[in-house]
Each structure stands twice: as C-alpha cells, then as structure tokens.
Image 1: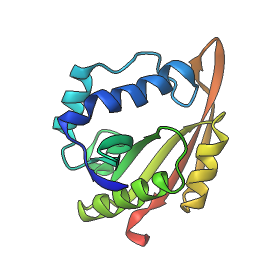
Image 2 (image 1 turned 90 degrees about the vertical axis):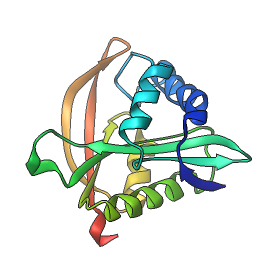
Image 3 (image 1 turned 60 degrees about the vertical axis):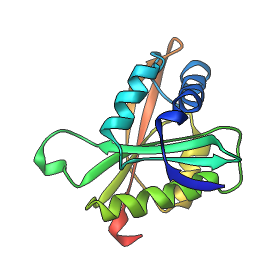
Image 4 (image 1 turned 30 degrees about the vertical axis):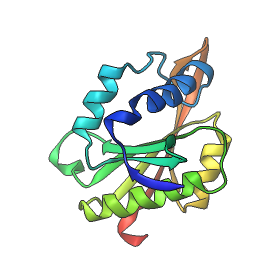
Length: 160
C-alpha cells in the first residue's frame, strides 16, 4: 500500500467509495451523491489536502481535509473526511498519520472529525488515534427517516 496525493485519475474510485457510503450508511448525513464535477473541483481546491491509499494501482481509500469553519480565527483548524473500502488492517491509520503530518506542515493546529453517533467503529478508530471527544450534538442530522447525533472529536496535530 502506498499513500500518495490524489489525482484526477482517482476520481471514479473516490466517487464509488464516497457514493457507496452516502447510499448505504448513516456514516454521512448527506443524501446527495458526489459527481465527477464535484470531485474534480474538490481535488483542484484541495491539491495539497487529499491523499489516497493506493493498493495495486487502485485507490482503496482516501482522506481529505479542509476548513472547519469560515473566518480567520479558524484558519488553523481543519475537518477531515476519511473513507476506506473493505476494512484493511492499518489503511485508515496510515492515511490519517499521513494527513496529520501534511496538515501540520501546512500550519494547521487541530484536526476535527465529525462522526455519526451510529458509527461506533469510526468513533473507536479516532479514539485509537488519540482524538478526544469534543462534543455531541443531539439529533442534528436526519437520514433514512431518523434523527442522528453528530459526535465531534478533535486532536491537536502539532502534538502528534
């Protein structure tokens, strides 16, 4: 497995991974699937903030990060999205370590994960990476006819 910068050639695999999650889970609250155009724009906007796990020449997972909130006071805080295909031992950890290293070099101070309250494996994953529970927002998401909690987890990356 190689962790590398995402390229335009990865868009179909990224789109498949992301849209599968959108369609089949409550891990993300959105119901709007990503298009090639959406991902093209995102890769242009986040040239230095989008990594993929390359397994035998194919994107098997990715991590991307961007502004947590608008405004100059939040300029050193980023929220990340990480998606892997079939569970692969260590892929998520390697993606996140590479993302935190790169984000730190970009001058970021804190990474934030916004996680569905129903996604216990993602919460446990972030805890293993020493992200701390920063808050729980009750019933702020709605998908599949249900209200869903949002768990916020944070980690100062200059301490990584």
